[in-house]
Image (cartoon, rainbow, N blue to C red; front, side, top):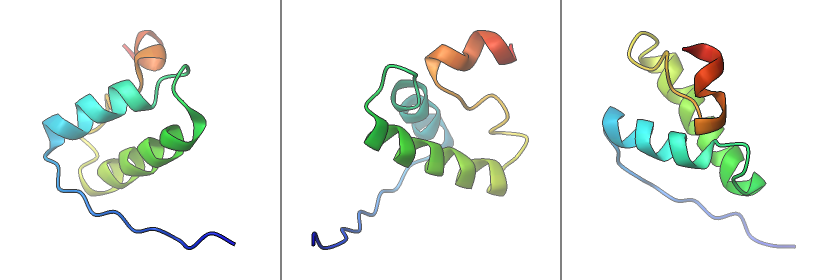
Length: 64
C-alpha cells in the first residue's frame, strides 16, 4: 500500500489561475486534474469573486 504524500505549495491568485487553466483542462491527466480542481475549490471558497472565472481551457467558452 503506497504511503500518502503531502505537498505544500504557495501561490498567489494569478499563479492559481495559470495552474488551473492548464491542469483542469479536459485533456489533462486525471490525477493532476483532481488536484487542480481541489485547488480551484479552495480558491472559490476563500475568494469567491476573485475566483469566479477559474476554470480549465476547455471550459472557458462555456462560462464567458
